[in-house]
Image 1 (cartoon, rainbow, N blue to C red):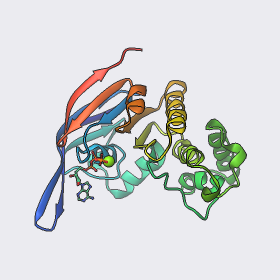
Image 2: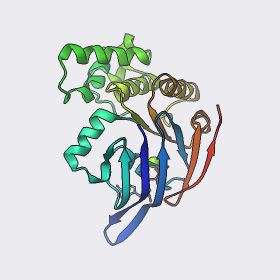
Image 3: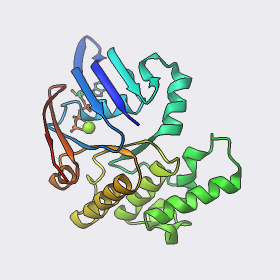
Length: 228
Ligand SMILES: Nc1ncnc2c1ncn2[C@@H]1O[C@H](COP(=O)(O)OP(=O)(O)OP(=O)(O)O)[C@@H](O)[C@H]1O
Ligand SMILES: [Mg+2]
């Protein structure tokens, strides 16, 4: 899915103080792009991911995702977009501790109108894809950090999203597990058509991306493209 971001600005009001998170960001993402966002803390990386994923609305500018204009959708429309088109991966995994790996991966499918059997099959396939099927009935607390992140990735891909957004996905992992996670994202990108945008300070993560963007003070200040 192609995504076009046109002159997007976003600020947050904290009491009397207005904090600018994005100043004027324009960006075109083509289906199948693998993009990294790096840059200092507070540069606006997470905010930009939130806007691409329909979690947040810009104050100004336009966001087009496929044939939908996100900035014109109501909250229900945005929720539908997230459910059907977006997968999120977070630094802290954000698995629900009382649910098994299998049940955690099922969560995004719950609101969808398919049969239970079809949903269970999708969950099994997603767990298999990230090599964690043998831990399906474990609780997050019984899994290592790398395993928990694989479950979180299974949850992010279970709805076959067009866009996968990852915010510091290797931040809590050791180097080896971080590399495994990045290999997995690369694989999802190459063997699927998902557009991947990953925010990270980690040079290994940036190295995995084909388009490498740097943000500063709410702007994209540079981009390098790595030819395959
Ligand atoms: N919910 C919020 N309320 C108020 N200010 C916010 C909120 N979210 C972000 N900000 C502010 O917006 C700016 C951009 O934040 P953002 O989280 O996008 O940065 P980042 O590049 O992801 O940083 P980091 O590398 O630390 O994750 C920061 O100044 C931040 O304090
Ligand atoms: Mg962030």
